[in-house]
Length: 326
Image (cartoon, rainbow, N blue to C red; front, side, top):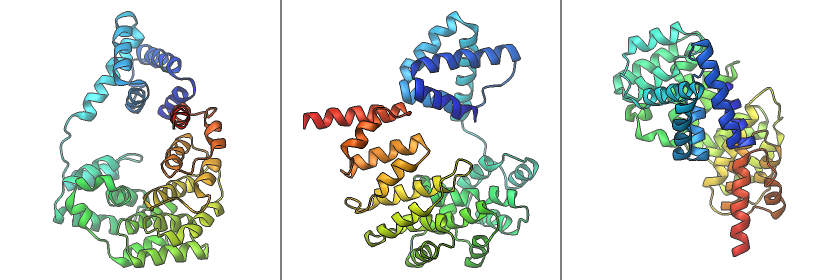
């Protein structure tokens, strides 16, 4: 949560917020003598947002003047180096010991194992996941299968992982679980293999109202132009609440489905997501997609100049300048 807060503050208040955060975090690190700053995301996000050279030049100069800036910079670079350094591939036994010994962590080591595992090791991991009775541990063991099925850019890693298929009976049982996270994992894994059967399941879930959010996840992976109206209606039927992320996951999936579909959307699905999402980053992606699909209204473009996300401001300014020239 602290990393999110830092990123959002720089989105709202820009460079001045970055400088204040560096000072405050450095002070915490120095006075408490602890690894208070445990996430490299804010550092990496700031490099993307303001430019790697600008961020590093500022921190380097400030480190010469301030102990606070110096210790922040050292910790950030230390973590950055650790993340970029090759990590040893764990054994299957080490994976099981790790996921069963930690309450909140363990997914990273499972993914590292799975990406480097051969068919026999992947089979052992899958069997362990299917036989696990602790739902939290089961989710960790399923994570690499879910992750690689959900994100296409992972296909360069783990050939054996991508080729593995769970038995239909196991996935059917997961789909009926009372645990929403396990249901989501099942649908993500099923959605990783687009087919007519998967599309029919998606249509059934969406039309029946039985599990609309997961129906959207599947339908977006198997979307045809004729399905757009159904997808739009399903998205609009989801309740949007601050205390849950079901709508967020479904909105993102629907956006991805519309993006890969050829031509302009025939419904107002993108505008609906833009106006109803509670996520500033999602608004940014929607604005980019509406511009790409040539469906971005002038009124929304003007609104974007006052968005709480500074990246949305920047996109709007670029598009307005482009439209003035053309």
